[in-house]
Structures are given as structure tokens and as C-alpha cells.
Length: 313
Image 1 (cartoon, rainbow, N blue to C red):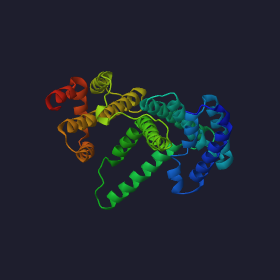
Image 2 (image 1 turned 45 degrees about the vertical axis):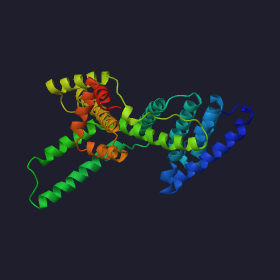
Image 3 (image 1 turned 30 degrees about the vertical axis):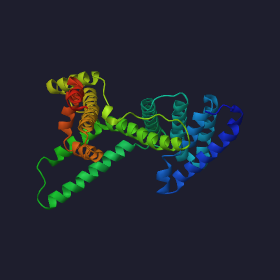
Image 4 (image 1 turned 45 degrees about the horizontal axis):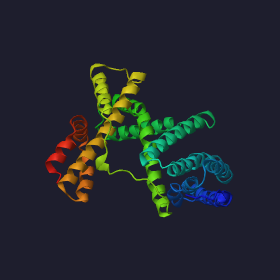
């Protein structure tokens, strides 16, 4: 860690310049810009890990202002996302936070920024991305229906099926937002922490995926949601429907990950090669329901303890 704070202006100017170059490439250069967009937070992250928080915040604010000068409104919106994200990553490294803490904090930050940007796009630009997405899906279904009708294969209740599908997509949209935010945070962390490690910073690591364990309370949440959805019916579009549909989806994804983690652990104690773990993870996707059952069993009955006692040498 940098002990001499007298150089913070020099290094700050360098990092702001590098941030500006990366942001300009990301905004104006096709294809290459897509790649650089994932490393724009890197200069701010490095600086935040090296220098005091007050200096890092100052550099972050300047970087956001520069992003507006370089890229206009779009550059400002992008800079408002990646500059504070770099600050968050670097500050977490400087304070020896775990990688899980970084993932949760980064995911929540991206989720909040996405929600704010969505609201601003509606209020100021009169652009509703979700409505445009749903309209695009409706057009797609209409085209499919026309093709099926032309060959005499259109089901009688096709319009009703389409309407229900679109309502379901609209209902689970919050889950996709949450999942997308944390997947984006994970990608940013993997790329930037790898580069920061090459720059001789002591970055945290995730524990092995086979050690992934959810708290047991998740199983109770899943049981409660399952009971409610089994014995109660909610009208499509109501708050209860939205709540339980999204809760069920998120919990199933978590239990799916728990099941895949159990599969990894089983392959590990058996001493099987890593490529077989990758193949099993791929096969777990079409066997989604079975994998969720494995996750439930592991969480409820601690299957790993049994496997460890039986196979671990």
C-alpha cells in the first residue's frame, strides 16, 4: 500500500487520464469498445486501493465529470456506473474485504444504478426500455403466428398462449434485473481483480465453487414460497403474483447453484478430473429440476458430510 500520500495528485492525474482514454474507446470504438468497457473501472480501482478514501473520492468525481465532457450524456451515464464501481473495488481491497463482500456490494450498486437510470430514461428521455422489449416480443410472436397460420399449424388458443407468455415475462422481469446485475458485477470483478493482481496488488479470492453453501434459512424460504404457490392462487399481474413468482425463481436459481456445487464436491472426493466437472455442470442445465432437488437434499440433510465420511481419504 502506498504510504507516501504526497504523490496522490500525480498518480490521480495519471489514473484520470487512463480512465478517460478507456472510456472514450468504450463509447466511440465498436467491438474494441465492448472489451474495454469491462476494464474502465481499473484505473480508479488501482488508485482507490493505493491511496486514502478522500483522495479516491476526489479522483472519482473528477473522472465522472471528464466522462461527461468526453462522451456527452451516454458517457456520463456510463461513467456514473464504472467510476464509483472502481472506487468500491479499490476501497474494498485497501480495507481487506472479502471477494464475496465485493460481489454483494458491487451487485447491489449496479442494481441501484440500473434502476435509477431506468427511471431517468422514462422521466427525461421518455424511453421505456421494458415496454420496447415487450413490444419486440409481441412482434416476434405475431410473425411466428403468421408463419404457422400460412402452413395451417396455428393453434386455436395461440393468442391466449402468447398473452400469458408475455405477462409471465413481464412478471419475472425483476428477477432478470437482479440476476443481470450480479452477473455483471461478477464479470467486472473477475476481469479487474485479475488485472489488479498482475499489477502486484493483494486481491482476495473466491473459495472453491464446491465449497459454496447457502444458509439453511434459504430452504425454509423455498418451502414457504412453494406452499403458498401450491395452495393459493394469485391473479396474474397482482402484487402477490409478482412477489411469489420472482421469489420462487430466485430461490430455484440459488438451489440450482447449490446442487451444482454438490456435484463438484462429489467429483472432487471421487478424484475425477476437472473436465468431468465442467461436463457435469453443462448437463445440469437441462437437468435443472433434478439439480434443484440435489441442492435441497444437500441443504436439508448435509449430503456432503456423508460423502466426506464415505469417500474422503
